Amino acid sequence: MTVRGTRYEQIALNLFRIVVGFLFWQHGAQKLFGWFGGFREPGQTAELMSLMGLAGVLEFFGGILIAVGLFTRPVAFILAGEMAVAYFKAHFPQGPWPIMNRGEASAFFSFAFLYLAARGGGRFSLDGVFRKKA
Image (cartoon, rainbow, N blue to C red; front, side, top):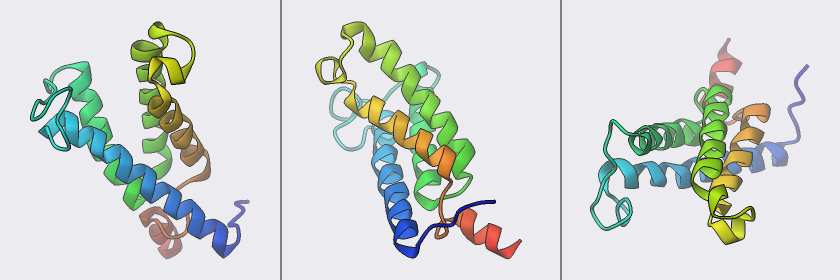
């Protein structure tokens, strides 16, 4: 049995999902297309056939899927794992505290996606629309 929650809970969940997806999508756009200041420097992109290129693909397309709420649970689970790997591979070696190793965004996104993987996209997501029709 799934707890639907109040209307305000659903609105908050969907706003959270949309904002997280929108913010995450931008990281992928930086890596893949050099938008928003580029990857590491203006206009620079990550090499597509590298770990950063894979991260860019996951972030760009995963962020869009999260924002619209399509395949929310599996996509969020994959993205939570990606962010955990990013934190422990890139940030943790610089020190254990996220504020000191500049890993706050990776840690936050990892737990935000873990929450969405457990909770789902919400009533106003594409997942919710398709579930309602079925």
